[in-house]
Amino acid sequence: MASKNSCACHGVVVTLASCLLLVAAAVSVLAAYVAVGRVWSPAGAGAGHHHSLSPAWVPSPSSRHAHHARELVNRRVQVGRMEAGLVQARASIRRASRTRNCTPDDGGGFIPRGAVYRDAYAFHQSYIEMEKRFKVWTYREGEPPVVQKGGAAFAGNDGIEGHLIAELDSSGGGGRHRARHPGEAHAFFLPISVASIAGYVYRRDMIDFWDPQLRLVAGYVDGLAAMYPFWNRSRGADHFLVSCHQWAPILSAAKAELRGNAIRVMCDADMSDGFDPATDVALPPVVAGARATPPQGRVASERTVLAFFAAGGGGGGAVREALLARWEGRDDRVVVYGRLPAGVDHGELMRRARFCLCPCGGGEGAAAASRRVVEAITAGCVPVLVAAAAGDDGSYSPPFSDVLDWARFSVAVPAERVGEIKDILGGVSDRRYGVLRRRVLRVRRHFRLNRPPAKRFDVVNMVIHSIWLRRLNLSLPY
Image (cartoon, rainbow, N blue to C red):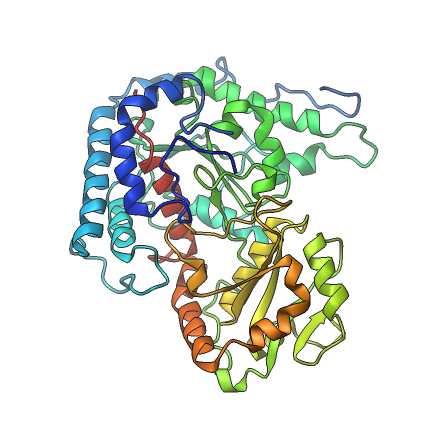
């Protein structure tokens, strides 16, 4: 990963509290970074089937939305007050971390505690500040297929997108974070629908299907930039998009500022594809059935399968292929399938297993890895991240690494030691396994989808908190 002149919020780099300390010291130089197009220092058209790039669903300064946009821009912008509030939020988080005490929380219920958190006090205080302060403006311009409207159209694995959008809008859930007008917004949501754009443009016989999609995305952002001042004043650093589609990293490259400055909330958290944990957010792809409260699963003594993995067919990366080559059909304790046999229940096997294998990298795809991790945690199964070495193809950034210490409730196995999995996992004592599983059950609330409405500390609000952290760590000179 490229070096950052920043307080990278990725928990592996620095703790949340340390990150905020660095922000306070860097305020005086951030203007220079914004001026050159990136807040944190970063590391051709072809023939084919093309669609018009200026249809009614791409915003235009001369469209019917222009008058409404000018009215919104003319409303009082309380930037000084917002930035002062962020300064106070940073100070309160640092104080909570230092004193190991938080502001009294009138939300009731769950309080983050324990070793699964990098800094439970800083996280809790940050979450309280988010609930109190964070406001998001969603651009209303545009129509499908370029933009996505609410959560009703999303189902299955990609349903997390719609649930998140609904929670940021008063039409779905409490609308706690919905800004009344853009002048009070800390962040701006670009409701670009990568999945809809891909489905609209793609044809089997196309020679070049990337260029039309890239131009649609670029045209949409350019249209908003012409109507509003918000994109240009921060070079996109306080804007974010949300997508669980595998093409999201590619289409976000439609504009250099969209890829380099904006917060990209994506299921594909693969650093070899350009995912930057300092500015991007890993979106857990919640699977069908995870919306309801999952069963506890069997107790440790009834989990007779040491480790389980099912590939589900289709192509995969080098790590997955190595796992299949070594273990598929070869052991009754390390149960590995390329494709589940008829009548075998995937969820039941996960609930019978002590460990669930989650191959990451080597071309496997971070979205697939993240999905398996979420499934394992939901089933109360300790996830085993079988990962390519850092810097190899497919370095995976797990969700919520800003606040969760993954080493405390998961097991990491280097890809080159796939053949030793049985010995490695068999060497985990019953006592150690019990600790790991209790911690998995503790973090499970953070991966649970509750709608309607979202509940405190659930997966939707954890994603919003991840966006909040990245905005909190910006001091924009506008």
